[in-house]
Length: 290
Image (cartoon, rainbow, N blue to C red; front, side, top):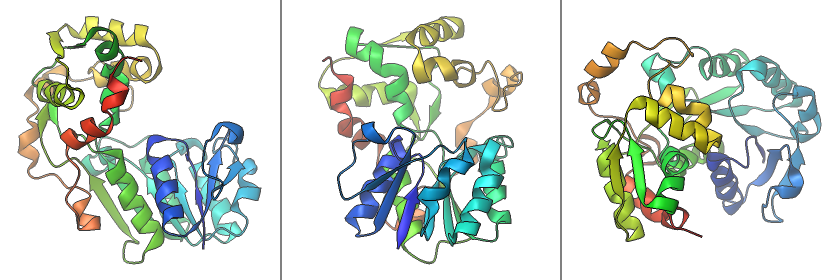
């Protein structure tokens, strides 16, 4: 069984690759930069770019199953190429925003393209990635021992990237998951302040929480660059999921506890989802200087 993993060097994709080769599957890891991918020799690294579907032809030869990183612009073409190449099953990395109805432009079109292909499908829909907190807060924690955030009491259930990979790998390797969409969250509703406390406990150092305005936070993230700069407007409520104007009053009135119990990886794996405290422990070294 040959499995192609697209987005193979991402936080989830890299974990999917590892689990598949540990399970004995023949794995192909697709990346735009094969020479810097850093996978074990047992993994066949192949060059390709989802934004250029024609570049996938060689990688798809003999592939039975595929983990698909979401690229809406080319999803229909990629799904058609996969079908023509003989792929039977696609597991899509989607988003919990599809479940809640907020996403109609980014992940939903990928799901629709795969379903329309007639292939077996499973959608993995993570909510807030715990890894986002490393991208947003990691730099200021390492350098200054501080987190500057405008919403200390804002709360949600960050999901460990390993839980996402667990469900994706399971759906690729085993039967019984086709035609299902798994929405994945962490097992606990945690405020930003509590998340910072858990990171501090994991690294064994105090972290100061400094409440700033949304404008100040946006300026800080823009200076930081990378993920923080690219997503500052959305994460801080300046724009909605589709890039439009945000209803700030609705944001203020939103009660996350009103959604009821959140779904986790346990629905698919039968194993309790990893906590944010465990995630912080797993990534503690990345929050430390040097």
